[in-house]
Structure formats: structure tokens, C-alpha cells
Length: 213
Image 1 (cartoon, rainbow, N blue to C red):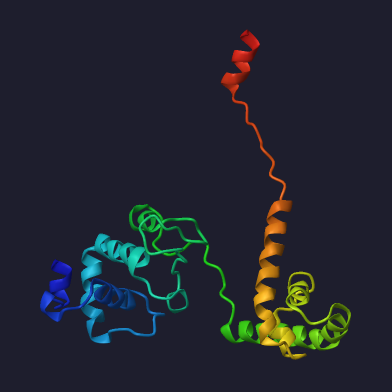
Image 2 (image 1 turned 180 degrees about the vertical axis):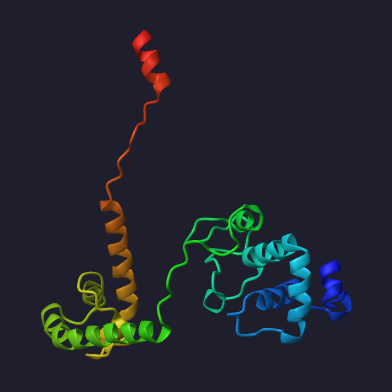
């Protein structure tokens, strides 16, 4: 509470807890774009006098209050909001980040793909699929005919979903019900074809008991 009073952030400010934590960390990390410059001398002086307090603030921030991983250097990639959710990169849970002896930041942070590159790559895949469908779908339709069953075969065997097929040849909407029925039948067939193997593990105690039997 002394830290909050020092920064003149009382309850009357009505700030959520992550708000002042984010601001404190913004002051602590020079590379963070949004820095509360007027407060920097106060915070730096306080942390010089109370080094443990800085570590506590950083640990709490990186465990529970970081925003998007793209906006926070060193942020963890947690798989959920709960305390036992783990970082997908370093394996530490939120609770471990908060209380263990390691640095607050993720120690195995991955380089994030550029959003523009990701979108461009997906567009290229979509256009490549459409180009391939333009050449192959008419031949397949001529061979299989246009029915719900044929549409299902085009999807689960050749990889052309109804929307892609409709972009090349006209798909009558009345056959979609038959398509869904045929796809469900194919899913059932695929599930039935899965071979489940039962593995029996023998413990040391079992081996000893068999030896004495």
C-alpha cells in the first residue's frame, strides 16, 4: 500500500489493479512505449530503496496482468486465465511465475510471425486451392455427377469443400442435406476403422509376485 500511496494512486482513482501494475512496469521497462515520465523519478527512487518491491511488482505483472503477447516483451503465452494455466513456451504456470525464483519474464519466448505475412500466406494457399479446383473439379463432377454423395466425396477424398466447389461449378442448394448425411456416414466409417491398441503395463511388484508364485 505504501507503494500505491507513493505514486498517489489511492482507491478513489478507481483503477483496476492491472492498471497501476501496467504503469509501474511501463516505468520499469524503458523499451515499453507507454511510459509515465513524470512518475519515473519517484518509482526509480522507490525501487532503489526497496529492490524486493520491484521484483514483486514484476512477478505479479507477468504472472497475471500482461496484455497481448505482442505488446509485452518477455510476456508468457498462457493457455488460459486460471492460476494453474501454463505458458505454452516455457511450461511455467501463472502461479509459478508469481512465486518461483526465476525471472518474471518468459525464458523461452518464441518469435511471433508477422501478421501481414501470415495473412499473405493464407491467401496464397486459398488462391492455390481455387486454381487447382478450377482444373480438377469439373473433371470430377463429370465423373461422379452432382449429388450430395458426390459432394461429400469431393470434400473428404479430394479436399474440396462445398464452398470451393460452388466457386467453380454451381452447387444446387437442395443437395446440401444429402451432403451432410453422407459426410456423417463417412465420419462414422472413419471412426470404426480406428484400431485401438490396449497396452498392459507390468510393474516391478507384479514381476516379483509372479516370480514367487
